[in-house]
Structures are given as structure tokens and as C-alpha cells.
Image 1 (cartoon, rainbow, N blue to C red):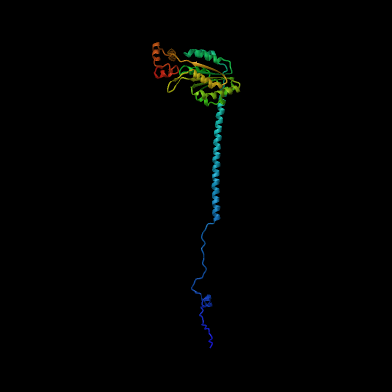
Image 2 (cartoon, rainbow, N blue to C red):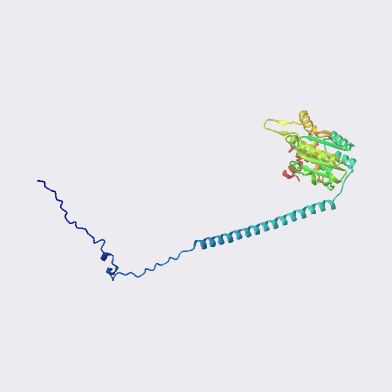
Length: 326
């Protein structure tokens, strides 16, 4: 007997509440709920564009101010520079004006007067005086006269006697070291406008032999370019003390000096001033005290306070003043 299977279908419970119309019905909304629109307060923000414009404006003002200040500073600087240049120009023109108003040339040295003065006032240097006068009288375009010797033998005194009545002239120059090396020949108007010039350089020593060469060469070349006559007088002190011994004015000194000045293209005269004796020193002291009535005994006592090898005639006045003799 066939048994037919029967399928049993039980009803399924389906929850349709989520799809219920009543759930979506707005009429069922709680009336107590506040659904009025919410007002959103706008914050007080600064516009970025306005900030940028304001910043740029301030920056422009600052830059303009700086530019104006810089212009003002530049203008002030220019005014000061103009004032300074004006003062310099006025000073320069004043110097030139003074030079030309006081301008005088001495073209002829009175050799007889120089010779008489040196022979009467310079002691112990008869041979040197004769050689010097011959060198000064030499008719040549350019000459370099070198006076050399120890301390106090009369080199500087000789130069001062020669220049005694000549320094008022525009073509006569007297220098000492090291100021001579700082001299500009462009301002030596006497060298340019007078027919001849006399240049004296004092207080030279062994160390200056090389230093002075180029300056002398430049001076000689300038006089040659201007077709002028020039006499250069150099005063060398060659007795100097080092840690071991005295360096005397020997032949080596003259030879070295001659070699160093070999490039100077003018005639050279080397004139040695000999050391003084005690008798020469006594004459210097007597001459210094000529306005006082002193006996030979008094002068002899004063001489005993001097070292003829160290003092010479150059230090007579100062030492007598120190000894309260004058």
C-alpha cells in the first residue's frame, strides 16, 4: 500500500512592523518636540584679503620711510663731502697762492761768503771745507755731495752755515730723515720754476743707505726731465755704536755708499769730516762763551767735562747748559 507523503506547511510569523505605514506616518510625531529652525551665529572673522592688504600697506610705508631716511643720509653725506672738498680746495689754493706770492729763486750762491763763513766758524775741517767749496763751484748740471763723518765733527753745522741766508728762497730745501722719504716732489715748486735747486738731507746713517736710493734717483730724473740744475747735499753719520764695537767711517762704508748710489746718474763727491782734537773742542767752547769774560784756565776746566770722541762741537751748547756754565 503506497503511502503518499504529505508535506505539512506551518504558517510563518512575519514582522511587518518596520514597514508599517503607521511607523512612517508623521502624524504620529511627538508634538512636544521643538522643530523650529536653529539660528547659527556667525563668528567675527577677519577677512584674509583685508589682512594681507593691510600688511602690505604697512610694509610699503616702512620701506618708503627707510628709503627716505637713506636718501636723507646720502644727501647729508654728500653735503659733508662737498664741504670737506671745498675746504681742501681752498686750503690747497691758499698754499699755492702763498707759495707764488712769496716765491723767490736764488740762482747764484755766494761761494766766497760761504767759504769765509766756514773757515772762520768751523774748526778742524780745513780740507773738508776746501773740497766742499770746489764741489759747490763745479759747473755741472747735477751733483751729489756726500759729507760723512762721526758725531759732532761739524757736518750739520756746515749745512746750517750754508743755509743760513738761503732758506727764504723757494729753490732751497732742507730735510731730515725720515721726513725726506715722505716728501712729494710734485709740491717742490722751486724745482719746477727755478733754474737750479739745492736740496740738503741731514741725519742720515748706515741704515739709510738703501732706503734713500730710489728717492734720490726720482729727484734727479725729475730735474733732468725739467732741464734744471740740481745740487743734493747728503749728511751721513757713519760712526754708530752696536753691541760689540764702534763702526768707523772706514773705506768699506764709502765703497758701499758709492755702490748703492751708483745708479744715480750725476757726479758724486765724497767729503770726509775728520775727528776733532781736544784743541778743536776748546775752540768750540771758547766761541760759544765769547760773550763772557773767561780766562784760559776757566775754559780749560770746562773742557775737562767733555769727551772729544763722543761730544764734539755739536753737543757743546747743551752740555754747558747742563753744567750751568751758560
